[in-house]
Length: 328
Image (tube, rainbow, N blue to C red; front, side):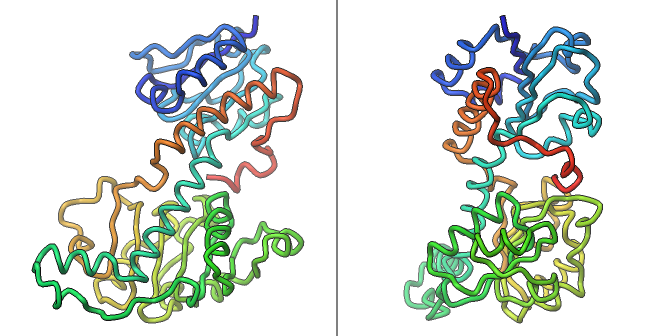
């Protein structure tokens, strides 16, 4: 019988797998789960297990040291905490089953913060909540329509692709992207113009959707931020390490730029951070991907991928070993 090991703590399994999804998984083989007090994977896991499901707080698997493991299904976003680079050099198939459902939720949150900032929803709410003065709270009198502003997408990751689709669905036409790994043919299919980093940054709305790699770490510094027009919006629902935090903080404290931020260099964000209380900033505690529906879809997709593989079909979200270093 196929041996399936779910190396995901119970607190995460409960939000990933509905009863029906768990039943489908159990119908595919003999399912075992990670003990709650486990700090490491079973030593013989790769020799006794056919399919391994990983996710948040899965003990690290540095390498494949057995001859039975055939499939790893990763249910959360980045795989780096759970899997070592050597895993991808093995014959084991790895699929990022959770990435696309979470990407859609993250893009939705980026869009939400963008709309709030463009339409000044947070300003009106803060005004009414603090003053209870209906008339005085109608400032500024006018917001900005999303289809009227240009967008620069830094990275066409899964999140970037979802954000692009959402913007296009809202009638936005001035959208460019910087991503050196997107071909001209693919860009034409997507309906987006690829540009250099400087040109992408010179747009009224800049959305960061790049992974953290040696190439992207700190790539948005003071020089790049200075290219964003006065009053422009910087959205970061990706990774804080992409941006020079001090440079961004300086622009926001000065009030030249606006921002919607879900990620920070230090999390939780310290209580003495100068970002608190700024009228031009929306803050969120790293929750962009957290919807119930995204979690359930992540679990469903993990089961779908397992089923496809065991039935001899190609998985839909296989990680190409050649592109591992481009992924977060």
